[in-house]
Structures are given as C-alpha cells and as structure tokens.
Length: 267
Image (cartoon, rainbow, N blue to C red; front, side):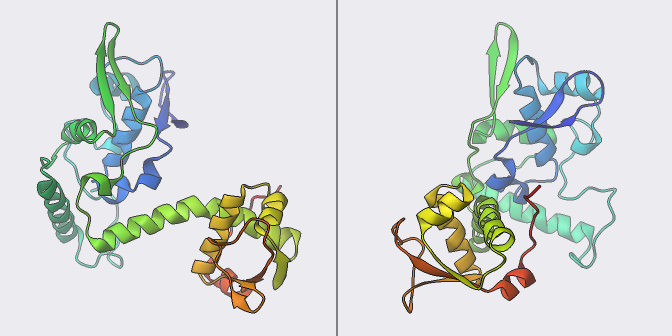
C-alpha cells in the first residue's frame, strides 16, 4: 500500500494499492471502482477496525463525492457532473452508459457473477473476486488486500481487443521506467549516439539495473521501432542474447522523439 492523499480532518491517510492501475480493473469497472479500492486500502491499514460504513462516517462524515455519496450510491461509468467529451464519445453520455453497462453485464453474466448496481454491491464482488478480504475478530472487522491483485482476465471473459489492450498497458507500465533509465543513459550521459557497441552486462552496470531489466527495456525499444540490435550484420534478439555477448545498439532518435514523451529522472 502507498499513502497518497490525506483524508479531511485529523484521522488517517488514504491508501491506494500499488497494483491497482497495473491490474487493469479501472478499464473494466464503473468509475466508483477506483475510490472503492482506495477506501478498502485505507481500511486495510493497521489500527483500523470496523465496516466500510464506519470508515465513511469517520473520514468523510458519511458522504464522499468521489465515491458518489455513500456505499448505497448508484454505480456509473462516468461522473454525472463532468463535461461530456463529445469528440471522444460522440454518441453522448446516455448511449455510452448503456453500452458500457451492456458490456459489463455480459462479462459478469457469462462468468456467473451478479451485476452490481451500488457501491456496496461492488464491495461484495471485491470480496468474491479476492480483491479484498474481510475478517471478524474480537477487536472488530479487519480488512486486507492481497499483495498482487487478481487480473480481470483471471475472473472475467474479456474480448480479444480488450485483453490485448490490457496486456499492452501492463507491459508499458512494467517496461516504462526501465526504458526511461536506459534512455537517460543513452541520451543524457552519452549524448544520443546513433549506435554503440555494448552488451547487456555493460548496460546493466552503466544504468545500475539488473541484466533482465535491461533486456526488457531493449525488447520494448525494438518492438516500438525506436532501436535495432545487430550481431555483425544480422539482427539480434534481445531475449536470446547472452549477458556478456557484444552487440550493436542502433537508436532511431528521430522516431523516438516523435513517438515518445520523456520524463526527467535527473537532478
């Protein structure tokens, strides 16, 4: 768990599970799924015992706009008070909501789960799915979340397009920081050379990363068309390279700068 934002008043900090965004549930659930995960993450902190209603009363005086009011508030796939983006969804809010509910309902029905209509309903599904656990103890109700959240595809039948999109998102979240570290070395420390003769273990030492992390970063750069690997004149496969084996790393910096947004990791 990581503490992200303070709850109003002198009570406790909100906590969000580190695995939430990488898991992909935000792309499956109604909008209240995220604040519900935050509420359960907060309840899972040491020192808290009680129901989610107790936490709502203690932290928000029983009403939290981000969750749609309280646990009995209706689930929606958009915030009703936000301006609608007709460019992204020209069909309008009502038609979009209907379509999202149909897709969501079909997935749950096919997997044998009830369709939740309120935040409280969804919290019970979190328990069923293993996103959260609830235990009654002599001190009161204790909440917890697993170290690694189950993935949507482990529980629900995802269509091929959605499954591919979630896999790609998880891959990017996994490799993004690794790529950024490698690019920082290539761009900021070496001055964007067109090519270098190197090896996985040399790059690992230069970037203070594990060899396998460097391998993943190179694979992502090659997959995205930003770089090419060669052994002699033949293309090389990052996944098959021995750690000590020399290869040429050729970077297409024009392609890189056109298609990627860099984050600053220096001082």
